[in-house]
Image 1 (cartoon, rainbow over the protein chains, first blue to last red):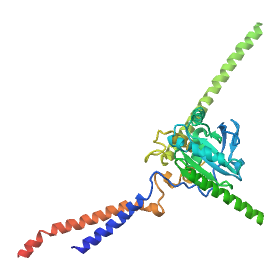
Image 2 (cartoon, rainbow over the protein chains, first blue to last red):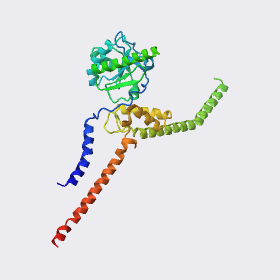
Image 3 (spheres, rainbow over the protein chains, first blue to last red):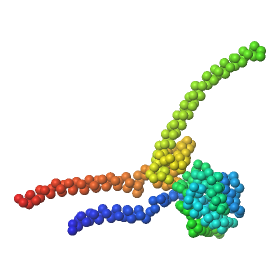
Image 4 (cartoon, rainbow over the protein chains, first blue to last red):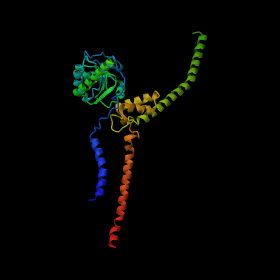
Amino acid sequence: MNWNRALIAVLFATPLIALFAWGFTRDPNVIVSPLPGHEAPVFALEVFAPGQPPLARPIGDTVRLADLRGQVVVLNFWASWCLACGDEHAILTETAKRYAGRPVHFLGVLYNDVPTAGTAWIARMGGQSYPSVNDPAARTAIDYGLYGVPETFFLDATGRVAYKHTGAVTEKVLTRVVDSLMAAATSSKTGRQGL
Amino acid sequence: MRPGGLVAAVFGLCLGGFTLEAQAPSAVSRTQSASTADSALEARTSAVAGELRCPVCQGVSIQDSPSELALQMRGVVRDQLRTGRTPEQVKAYFVSKYGEWILLEPKPRGVNLLVYWLPAAVVLGGLGVVFFAVRRWTRQPESPGQAAE
């Protein structure tokens, strides 16, 4: 055997195999968002679907991110034409109900859709416990670096993006992230009071 | 109508007509300068949009994509340029939202340098291999002859 040839082949092949192996560990559809850890982009969007008591807000009401400071915010971008949005709808609406009365605010943001279609979709899905707002020309969606729907952003009580979930969100993810953000908010509040 | 009133009306119409005539060139020049400004803005928008990747497409810029999101992103580019932001600032805005992935041409720094240098290195390596292989092939026929002698 020509050991020199074998050595050259190994030297060329090893980095290539390593590169392909690394590629297999990555989902090309998931692109890491630079937003987590940064201040959440502000918005002021109008409610088109009021939600249900006790989480309801009147239609036409403007939801401003600045007004939600001090609460954990779950911002879910959705559309009536999005199939995966149907998969997560019941989970979101039930989880929002479960957290009612606690410092957590669930908000749906309609993406590239018309409010009438959104309202009809909500009715077909059996209602939505929390309000949804309209995002004309997807300006807020672009501000949040949206690729598609559904995407869910979790904002902490200080107004920073803590986590972004791409695709249909699960109850496990919702509960884990919301609980951890609420715990962090409580501990920082206790810490401030202790000082 | 009194004759005086008629004269005044005719005079007024003439004056009005004159005023319109006098205003017309400036209105035209205003329209022309506005359309020049618009086309300049469109050209700058196209240039920036051509460097940004469409998030819902495969390797297409937001300038070339017909998707709704690309159209809306072009609107953001246009609005930001109109407010006086430089192309670099507009691109920095999109990078801050989507990461460097949004740039069709990655910045030549860090790991990105591989994209620029690796193809050249592979081509050089290939040329080296071809060079040595050709040299060996051209030498081989001589060896048996030399050995026979």
